[in-house]
Every structure is written in C-alpha cells, then in structure tokens.
Length: 302
Image (cartoon, rainbow, N blue to C red; front, top):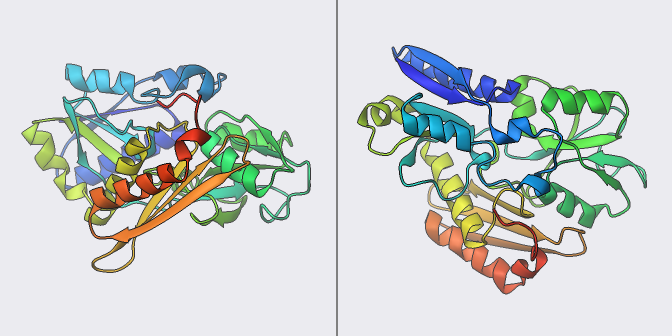
C-alpha cells in the first residue's frame, strides 16, 4: 500500500488521483489522505500578509516525516527551493503548459481590456509584470480555488483574471481562456506546470516505486529554474519569473524576469546552455547585475 498526502482542493486532488492512477497501473495499491494546509485555512488572507514559505506544504511534510503518508504530490511551484534534509524529490513527471493565461467572459486578450478594467490575481509576480504592460488597469487581490475565482469572474466582480494554464487544462475548465501569455511577455514562476513527488530521503521502497514517473527534460528545466530562484533569494511571493525550456538535443534556454511591485521597471535575462546549475546561476547573476534585488527590496523573500 502506498499512501499519498495531498491538499484537499479540486486541483490538488486531481493531481493526487492522477499520480495514484499511474502507480496503480504499475500494480501498486494506493490510498489518498487529504491534509489541510495553512494556505487552505487562510483563504481570505493575502499571501503577503501570511508569508508563503511552505504555506501549502508544511503540514503535508509533517505527515510524511511522521510516516502517516509515503509520498506527497505537490504543484512544484508551491515547494520552497530548499527542501528539509529528510525529504527529496523522488520524481518530477512531464510538465504541462507552464504559461499564465488571460481568462475573461467578454474580452479576447490582455490588449483588448479597456482602460480601468479590473483584473484579478493573487500573485505579485503576475501583477507586477502585468502592471508594466498595462498600468492603466485596476488590479484586484483575488484568492480562492479555481472554481471560486471563475465564479467571481462570472459574477462580474472583475473583467478578467490571470491563472496558470496547467490548472485549468487539468480540470478541463478552459471555456473562458482567451490568451496564453508567452514567457517573454509574462515569465511564469519557477516550476509552473510541473508536479513534484516528494518522498523521505533514503526511502528505497518509494524511490523505486516512483522512478518511472520521472521525466529527465522536465527535471532539468525545473532544476535550473529553482536554482535561479534560490540564487535570487526568492520565494513564491517575490515578483520573480523564471522559465527554462529545451531548445535541441544539447541545449536549453532559460528566461528570467524581475519586476518592481508597481510595474515601473522590469529587468529580463536569457541564457543558453547544457548544464542546469550553470544556467540557473547565469540568469540569476545577470538579473542581480541589472539591479534585480533592489526591485523586490522590503518584500518578504520566503
């Protein structure tokens, strides 16, 4: 029996059931244990108010450490860049669409939103990059699960919202997706679109059980992204975007973007190479040289 720890949101459970089905296809018996996290309990509080280090993972890791569950399934972007020593990423399955999307009933793209339109997002990274592109919009703090945010949009509380493509694609809630924003326009968060299978370090049974789920291309890309994020001193609520993708058999491209919270300035960087650690450090060093750390000074970095 393999016991999976997961948050109870619709998307988290989709992810857990997806991994469970793959494990069952290899002959394993699987159970899912739903664990409520700090981030789930504080739905009405902004990320900036509570700090985000481990807010969607801490309680699940406690259950993993205690042996109540054998592995945890996370959205990789929710995981802090440095895992506690007793845990490791046993597998990173193939990534799906990493982009952010514009979701709206009435408007076909970011460009078509009229001046003064309300755009909902809980992410400082998204908001700061978008403010640089569209300073004339009104940015509304928007928390809640996917269904809650879509309901608020449907009620007309905002004209558009920005969400991760991956969650909407996985839940098949794509009806109002109007535009997928390329990483050169709005750079995604490190690990966006990827799942992380977290296990106890040294647990040979789980290491062997989940090995078939690991995708080398995705692991390379997200490793470079997380190294860059860590080198920049950023957690998931600092306005840092970083995205790595495979170019050819030997090379990957990494893009980085850091924006001032008010959108007044964005610094961007790009590097190409074949070593994940080198790429991550290269793009971080270039962004810092351009003054990236000054842009998020005073913002909680974890």
